[in-house]
Length: 265
Figure (cartoon, helix red, strand yellow):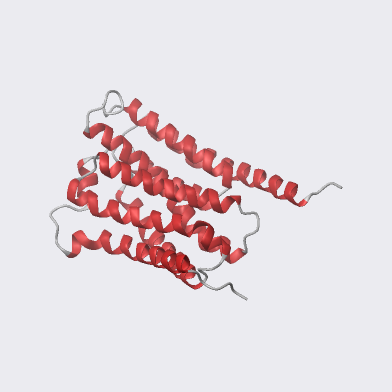
């Protein structure tokens, strides 16, 4: 028997559901209203060596669909411990993503947009780490939370691209220089952060989203004939580091699970 819904459950369900709708609606707003600038235009203005090829952004259609499914399941199972535990983080991620989609066409990629996307990524990480700490999750429960893990992986990459873009906009020393070394430093930093999450969770969806971004970076650089260290590091991370990290993450999670079941007497 399901526990009765509390007022906070209903508020959380509305927060999550409207956030899932808002990130789709506000992302479409520049096209519907005919704004002079879109997110794609702003991204082209602040292009860096880490900006993926255009096709890579098609991942948003998959992410939006997954987030909508999560929001629908959340509304049905809003009293479950899992939804109470991490639903607020999912709603915050959706709404911050919607805010970023509204801000960038109007004001460009700058300090505020960077703060918003970092906040969105942080909300995803809070969701991921909260859910990962739970040892008992049903298979449907694991499936429904996958879009948030994938969103976190994509935002891991997007935050790095936005950070480098903002450094260039403000002409920051070294990082804003536009040099290969600056892009490489940011890329390695983003990969180290991704490695920490993947090792902690063993999440395939997080790794796949990061890998998709790396594919986009490699595709764009090789298409432009740019033979840089960024391309080489991206290739190494995509084909060797990410699969290894997932396997290590699975192994670590397996040992933790076995340890939690073993109770010496």
